[in-house]
Image 1: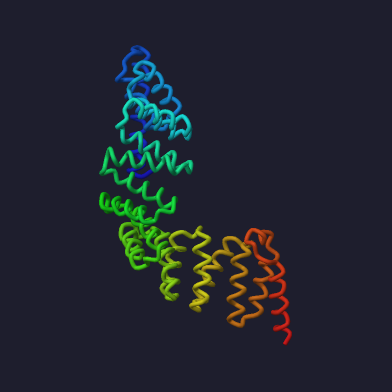
Image 2: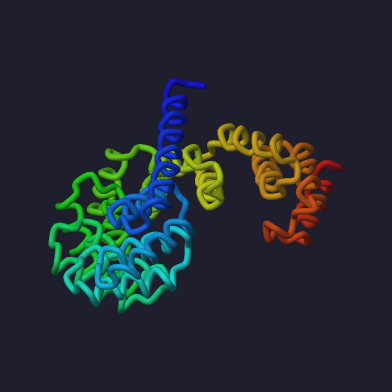
Length: 326
């Protein structure tokens, strides 16, 4: 066990001991409000959500008009994925304290998650009215406006989010996405480069830059971006597809073959990988190897997963067999 792990275990043990001591004290003094609130907060922090909810409810029964208690109850319901009760708690908190910006923000976020964009927009706007320096509210408002097709307004709020928090990689990414959507590709590239300056492992920034390079006909640069995307996130099927497509256009056959052959070593039934290996061998005139991989693709029980036309595969195989007979 590492020193860091040992420290975490010790801290967890201390908190568990603390929770037990608080529970014992509350048993002796059940009306100790400040201790019960501290106990509820620690339960929430440590992930004991159901127990925390019961404690907040107990406190609310004692102090029904305390807005922060309803807010904390809402946060706990949200962590427990009980979104309806979380929303009700946030609404009660706002009713008791209309200028509680965090409650407006959290309520907006839940509307956003549900796809109720107009009330989400209104809650984020109210959050910003109450707290103009809330960068997260500006960012989320920008994203909602984007979903509503209001690109110009989305860009405005994303820029404010960046001004408030210059290290917000997500705000830069979505700003790049919006700029890309309206054809401002140079500005979009600048935003994506800023994303990568903050977080070099942000794979989707590489992916979108690859698309821009592809749009401009700069296929070698596009290939490098798609390659970076794939190596950062090997589970990204769309990145793999574009990497293969563009790699073949660039005649980078050896690199693509290395990637695909690693895939079939790990998963011999990957019909998509076999089919692309077969295509590359075909382009290189290595017909026997090509035929072998077409057969592997056709015989894979997972062929239908990749929406590959089996009749097309058979046609390619027949063509190859004819070439091999000559």
